Amino acid sequence: MTAPFSWIKPEPHGIYIPPADCWVDPSRPVDRALVTHGHADHARGGHGETVATPETLAIMELRYRTGTENDAGEIPHKAVPVQYGETIRLPGGVDATYVPAGHVLGSAQILLEHAGERVVITGDYKRRHDPTCPPFEVTPCDIFVTEATFGLPLFTHPPIEDEMAKLLDRLAAHPDRCVLVGAYALGKAQRVIAELRRAGHKAPIYLHGAMERMCRLYEEFGVDLGELRLVSDHSKDDIRGHIVICPPSALNDRWSRRLPDPITAMASGWMRVRQRNVELPLVISDHADWGELTRTIREVDAAENWITHGREDALLRWCQLHQRRARALALVGYEDEDD
Ligand SMILES: [Zn+2]
Ligand SMILES: [Zn+2]
Image (cartoon, rainbow, N blue to C red; front, side, top):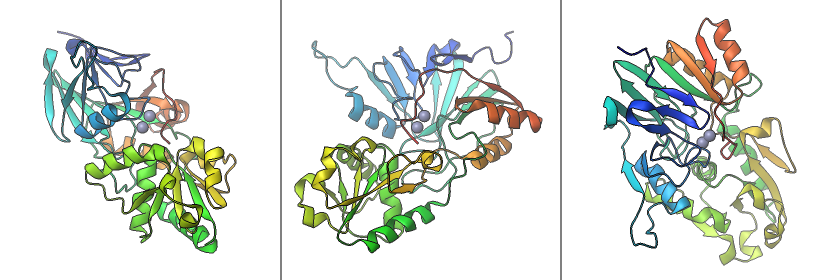
């Protein structure tokens, strides 16, 4: 007879599952990793075996060349694909089921079951509509491990339709210029493009070269992004009156000089509080805001909540005020690649 939940251990470098000898989203290379999604702070290269959705494995392959042969002609990494809703049996009698998290292409919550106990690890998630991935599913469990990137009441993300309207209005008002949108290469860029299409914007959208491969990967997995063109294949005049998407780091660098008098925009949840040097801040996040976090904790209704990956304190306090058991985890190695 073992103590309840002795089979799951939060450690600084990830959540460890002793009977299966594996880690969830470890921040350093391990023999066996279960990975929730492809952002760099969750998906590191160098694991012996990676269990993830086919989309996440493809993203990791693109970023880390995990399936590449070494000098001895062997592929040292083993990729184990798991579809949404599929359960795989890990060593030690632990079952893992991958459930949509609504964050980016391929993102999953991982439901772990062992000895009649259920733990859900969300990775990153949101509850808003996203045309590029299936929606978050509420999964009953005993322990709910939730992210808290935007875990402060001041973070309320506006409807994305309002932000798209701002962007399209600015574009229409300046037909001789272009709007240059800074967006992270995995997730945010493709969501902005897909939302522009949903808003009826049919014109070609221009890409910085660094966005191209990830956009093509999304298309291979069935996400329709409409006509995309590379900035490098076109003249300044071609780009007038169009939207250009680039990594945030390219917004104010030399590269943007080839564009026709760009209006700079940035798509990020942090635009609520940090507006940097952009003319058009767009508050668009792939993480749950305060209302989504508290609603999700209520709906999942777990016996215990473990809070990680962000601003744990306010959410911890909220749980206490609402008579919900909660603790903050001290995981290291999380950054804001994705916001
Ligand atoms: Zn993420
Ligand atoms: Zn993250």
